[in-house]
Image (cartoon, rainbow, N blue to C red; front, side, top):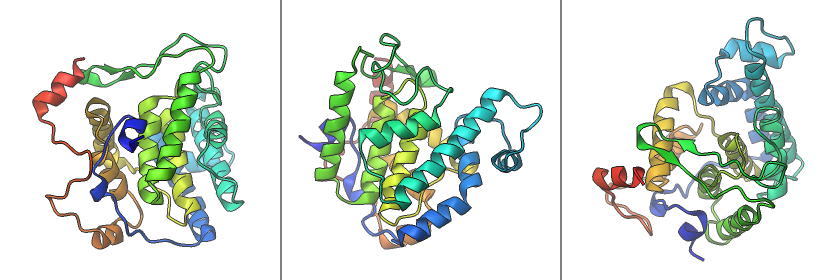
Amino acid sequence: MDVFEALGFRWDRLAAPWSVPVHSIERVCFHFLRMLPEFVWDEGGLEGNPFTYTEVQTLMEGVTIGGRRIADQTQILNIARSARRLVDLVKTGQFALNRTIFTELHGLAAHEDALEWGVFRGEGEEVLYLPEVSLGERGRYKPLPTVAGAQALQDLFARGIATLDAQVPHPFEQALAFFLFAILQQFFFDGNRRVAHLMMNGILMSHGIDAISVPPHHAEAFNEEIVRFFVNKDGTAVMDLLTECHPDAVAIRAANPRPADRRGPGWEEESDEEAEGEAGT
């Protein structure tokens, strides 16, 4: 099966970086742990969490913050806990792109912050609720229905990762493609972007590539591109922005020149009128 068909979206494959700095596993894990408060703060900001960077640092040191909602505190602690678990998995060679790790990390990242956590939609007690994604003025995105047993989601996930493994061997491109696959298909009731980000970084770090965090000055553009991705099913712009957020972005740009006329397989230009028309469906 073609990778675009298996995942449900396309991207300009010729634009994906093929030369990326690689380090030891120990080095990338050490770097991630050093930037952990920043990663947690960035991640919380994408979720609309009001905690400041200093408050995140304080909370991660075991000191509670007065005047903050318990739900916001729980979310920050969940992000930190799941990120630390990710590092443990990578350092011990246990990380893998599979459903077991995916659901384990979700169980940590969305604990008591989602309708259910650690199971695909339909695998738990709730078998009817469908989590639509709000796209603002572009309407709403509806993923596959929630069905008891979640067989369709299980099959979709298995097919997706098998196709990624077979057809997208470069870890940088594979990591970004999985991130988009996971948020598009909405395997969980909530927390999909958080766990997709963890898995993306797990793929990167397990191959000696530094993790990616989306800082506040990129957050607005990132969220706008995510909306366009849901509408157009083209992940090129989101991948470009994630690449810009990588610690080695300058080196990656220098090593991977991208002429304006380069287009990957399956790429088709779409007009604004077409995009808006699709958004209304």
